[in-house]
Image (cartoon, rainbow, N blue to C red):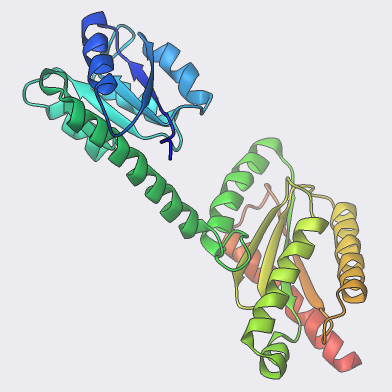
Amino acid sequence: MIEPVVRVLLIEDNPGDARIIKEALAESTATRFQIEVVQTLADGLVRLAEQDVDAALIDLSLPDSVGLETFHRARAGAEGIPIIVLTGLDDDTVASAAVNAGAQDFISKNRVQPDSLARAIRYAIERERMLQQVRQMAVLDALTGLNNRRGFVLVCQHLCQLANRNGRRLGLLFLDLDGLKQINDGYGHGEGDRALVDMAKILERTFRKADVLGRLGGDEFVVLLAEGSTDGAGRALDRLRANVDAFNQEAARRYRLSVSVGLSWYDPATPAPVDALIEQADRAMYVEKLAKKKAA
């Protein structure tokens, strides 16, 4: 089996040091490397933004940036790309600080060895991949793939800040999947999980990409509406109910999906925390659920 080529961006302004790095990686027998060299941080940031390299080796002393600031600027433009710091400093103090700030590793250019350099790059890529998986797990619901509560709140906080600057309202829907306990009791928890996944897919079909979807846990879902008008919220709810009805007709489950919904508003004139908006919408949802039970 042919090993894939590892694409490495080397940001190094010293031609001699760049040659040493390239020759060391060319001697690697376990991994094939494709090296691209740029001499300034500005050029490196352009390449990192294109997201088509697997790892970056960065000298901390460049014509347009020196020291720990070099790493911070590179890291900000290299989401998901592992960075290994190269240093010529004997005490490696600045490089150690870069590792503490998020660099995957550091290597002294005075002590470059082919095997150790290649191994450091491979390990850095694997560690970064694992970190990305952990970060994703921290903000996504494992069952449905929607934002979990933490992920939903983080995104909503950012959108509320934008709403403050734009002076626009945001609507928040709190949705409760009716009868989940009965589905679990009657058909098993596996079928209950299936109903939750079905509901998540209905939400994804109903709402726009600009809207933020989340599952808080259990039978509770939330949606932040990017369009902050009463009419827009009403149209969204009409689409939701139509899509739920269509699913029930087409899926032929042994039960019917039903959802109760509450709505709250974020108003830049009287800003409120996201958790408070969720609580307001939750109370409104409970009113609708009670009305359904009385009408049944």
